[in-house]
Length: 477
Image (cartoon, rainbow, N blue to C red; front, side, top):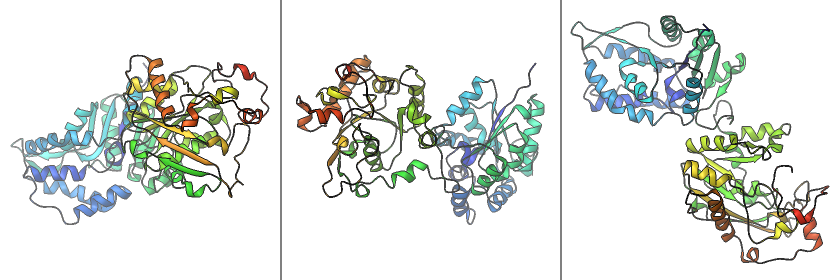
């Protein structure tokens, strides 16, 4: 029989967005188990949420066993029950996906934390974890009150490794086949003892340790693959959004309206028409005004390109191989939405060419409609206009020199599209109609382009059939 591993998860700043201590402290006060705050307690929690575990915070946790002497265990367990749902709400949005991977592989998922067992057990049960390894307080002969001692190791640093090893031995678990997840440098002993260490939302010291030992780093508050700047924990896209401003683009006269239609939080599907290579820049400016980030579905050619592809993934892009019809990008987008993120899609799939570029009626593929039906996330339309004057399909680079008379470029965000979720084709038509309504009146009228205007819609070296462009499906360009 093959050896079985387990997945061990730290609690604070790993599974949870911040520290559980403040939640438990409030619950204990509400239950009358604690009459006053420990001096400096609030500062310790703030420091913990900012930089992770410190020796003072662990000294405070270690002292708690003495302070608990004479307290009723049943009352503590009841207080823990009252905040279990609150703690579950603090679980990082993309932890569920990691849990699913381990469950699919048959590995038990175990919480390994310094926090006292009686406090975290209701939370672990509510979350559906398989077991809990935590600091246990001794109980007096009456069977209910704490006696001020530890029943086993203080589950921190080397003590956590000791407790995990004992649990693994009792459950026939192979540490070499196991996984451990933690943010704290003090969990280095445990991570070094398993075959698959994973650093999550690392504190500054753990960032250096992970780099030195080449341990993978994971952030459970963003989509898989998204990178953050070391130490400061700032998402790369957030940094880029600081520069997504019309004032920094002197070669275009940019106007953006309607961003108040984009929800401030929660899942959102942002859809826009496609006219130019400049469209992603315009969409970034739209999103930047919301203070949010976005996961954009993009064609595989971008992700396959050296350096550019790595950056696209690090920024949260979702790779789409349009020729295969795979549902994998849709699944990745649905996961991002489930985590409360925003997903961006250009339903047309690619920039129309030739006469198709000038058609008043926009047509799109079904991806956005299918994603909306799957997730029920609101679909917010964006109408882009004039972007082709900045960077036409025929040019390899945008026109950066036109600063004396820059072309007008607009992005108009509309209200949520009302969908029926019964037919992907019908809902796609509703989406494209909503986008069309946001375009200027000239976009709604038939137009006979000049040969020069047609030429600007074709990529460099184009050898296709202009008459068949209206029927062409993306996947080979």
